[in-house]
Every structure is written in C-alpha cells, then in structure tokens.
Image 1 (spheres, rainbow, N blue to C red):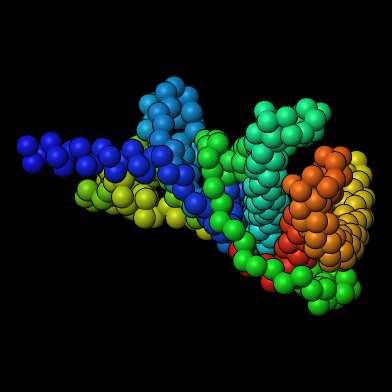
Image 2: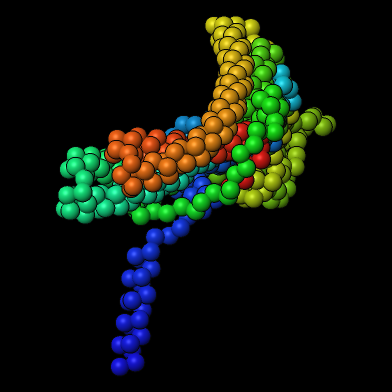
Length: 471
C-alpha cells in the first residue's frame, strides 16, 4: 500500500512538472543555441583544423630522417655486392641505410608559412566567436520578440475583457428595451475584432516561440516561457555612434578576424615570393650491406715447394725451393659485415630556380590579388559595422522619442476613454464615441509596447557592439 501511495505521488509530481513549462532566461537560451547550433560546431571544428595545420607546418622545421632496409636473393650471373666482381652463383644480400635532410635556407618560405598559418589560426578562433555572436544576436531578437508578443497578447485580452463587459451590460439593457439594438451589435462587432486580435497575437507569439526553438535546435513547445528582462530606464544612450564604433573595432570578433586574415594574406605573398629564391639543404647518409658471397682468406700452413726455377752450381742445375703459404676461404659473418661495411657521406645541395614555366610568378601575382581582396573585405567589414551601429543608434534614438510620445499619448487617451466610458454608461453619448475613444487607447497601448521592446532591442545591439552586452 505504501509503495502504491509513493508511486501515485511520483506520477502526480511528474504530470505536474510536465504540465508546467520551463521558464528560460536569456542566458539559458543563448547558451543552448550556441551548444546545439551546427554552424557553431562546424566553426569550432575549423579552429581545430587550423591549429593542426599550424602544428604540421611547424614540424617542417625539424630535419627529415629516413631509413631503408632491403633483403634479396640473386641467382645466376650477377655482381657480388661485396667485391663488385661478376659471380655465377646464388647470393643472399641485404642493404641498410640511414639518411637525413635539413633545410638551411629556402627564401624564408617556412618562416613566413608558419606566421601565415598562425595568423590564420587566430582568425579561425575569432571567426568562431563571430559565429557565436551572430547566434547570440539572433536569439536576443527572437527572445525580445516573444516578450513583445506576450505583452501584445495580454493587452489584446484586456481590450477584449473591457469590450466583453460592455457587451454583457448592453445585452441586459437590450432585453429591457432600454437601448437601441444597434448599440449592442456595434459592441459585438468590436468584441469580434478584439477576439480576432487575440488570435493574431497568439499566432505571432507561437511563431516567435518556434523561431527561438529552431535557433536553440530543440523541439518546439507552444507553451515555451521566457523570463522578463530587467526594467529598462528609458534614457538616451550615453555613447555616440563614433565611440561605439571605436569600441567595436577593438572588441568585435568579426572586425579582428578580417584583420588577421589580411595579415595572413601579407605573409602568403612572402611565401609565394620565396619560390623565386635559391634553396640550400644539408644531407647526411649512412650505409652498410651484407652478401652471402663475401669471404676472407684464412691462413692454413706454409710448405716448401719447387718454384720451377733453377740455379747452376758447379755445372749442376739445382731447383729453387720457395715457401708457399696455403689459405682457405672463410665466409664473413653477418654482423661482421654489418659493422665493417659502413660508409658515410655529407653533402650540401643548392637548388637555383631558373625557369619553371613562370608558375612562381603567377603564384606571386595570385597571392597579391588575394591580399588586395582581403584588404577590401576588411574595409567592407568596417564600413558595414559602422553603418549598422549608426542605424542602431538612430533606431534607438527614434524609439526613445517615440516611447516618450506614446507614453504621454496613452495617459491622454486613458483619460479620454475614462470620460467616454462614464458618459456611455450613463447614456450621455453614443457607442460610436465610446468605440473611438476605446480604439484610440488600445492602439496607443499596442504602439507603446512595440516602442518599448524596439528600444530594448536596439540597446542590446549597441551594448553588443560596445563590448558590454550582459545576458
């Protein structure tokens, strides 16, 4: 029984949790979008590729070391690798070599290539930050749009509630014959418009929630809720566009990334020019070999033997006796040959380019064009950032002025509607006067909401360019 009660409580708690939508903060939405976004992941992968490329080019400063090992069998007439003489027998042979090669000079190619890839690696890191910045701005825009649509939806519900109360009051009066039916039906038509506004605002809110869900790359939830942003003080922005632009040039990833790409293009030109210069390399070589035909003479003994010559002594010819040394062939052992057959060599090679179908000069020309293009991209990026800052500053200023004006308009229309409602309820005015006053107030409140969130959004954009965006 106890287990059943616990299970029932657990299921009730789970159903309750599912029924309640999670309230997301702006920071949570941005972090989720950055974590799940595939474009961000691809950009992060490019950072790793650039880092690996840099490590690879750095390793080219190390000398090349290589070893060759070969074993084989020769049959028939061949050259004895030990004596370099012709033999006609089966010979087992082996060759071993160890070599190294060091670049002493190549026109600064390696040095500039390392700097080029180092700058490219830094640019990749900043482009990764740029991708995250873009996602952040998109999420902020969608987040603020949700808040905007929520307030508009609440406002439209309040408008409908006011109209609904009037319709209910007029229905009672109409039954009693105290009013003309046209007054009731005019208010019912207004209620239909207010309810249609609720439907439109609800659809706009769902659309904004869908956009935010897609940016976060999570399943869509129609009941997705976001936290309200902190209360904004509606004062003029403290910095002018030039100050914001100056900070953007120092802090904005997209600007700094193009500057690194420009510096990388400068090094690319130097790399291309290095092909026009001679290159100098130092090489070393160590070699040894083995041959099964290799042998050495082994002393056996010394014997006396007639040489075939004669000497005449007292008219007699006497044979000349000489000592003859006898030798036997002994195979030279493997490791003895391995140790005794070492040979070494050291060389310096100089490669002087004379003519290579003008490929080097074309590469230099293309590198210079890439440099020029990188310069245009850098300048274009700065211009675009400056224009965006100026536009955002102008929009924020306009939103500030519009908000202040609309705030006063809401106050005025609220007083006008209050007066119109009192007169209408007292039967001292027509429904036309009442509807005009109500629509004026409703429209002013909606415009005030739009101006409020437009002001907040423009401020977030300027904070982003200033490097002081707080989520």
